[in-house]
Image (cartoon, rainbow, N blue to C red; front, top):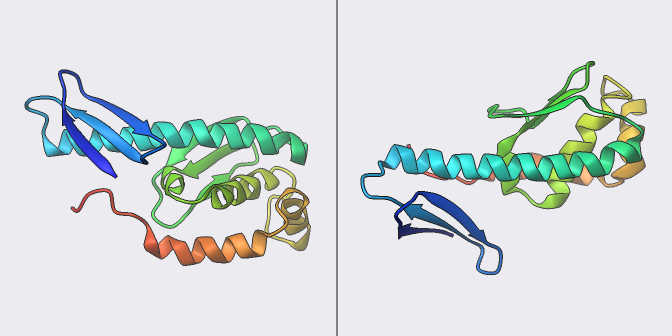
Length: 151
């Protein structure tokens, strides 16, 4: 739930109990500025959560990644380079933790196997056993992506 409230200073505060994102709206704030403010909040939350999950799973897979950046790709949830640069789509923040974990583990697994061979899936399976289920769920849910604001 997005709740707009008059405020002296623009801000976003999430209340986990009510599952509300309260946005302080200042006088003169345009719709475009409001949209950008909410998007920036989601991106900051995504970066925080993804960093936490990478820190959890990288040691379990025995890998080290170099950097994390967020993407806004239309069809790709993540990518990983040979140099250890991981990109994750910030829109994953809308999904269940298990689906986020699947994508994180998938990208980290590429640091051991830079392909989608049976050896790659074995690496994923070391820490995320139901990768087939998560893959199917992510594919199914990707058609249900929440729209923050109409265009």
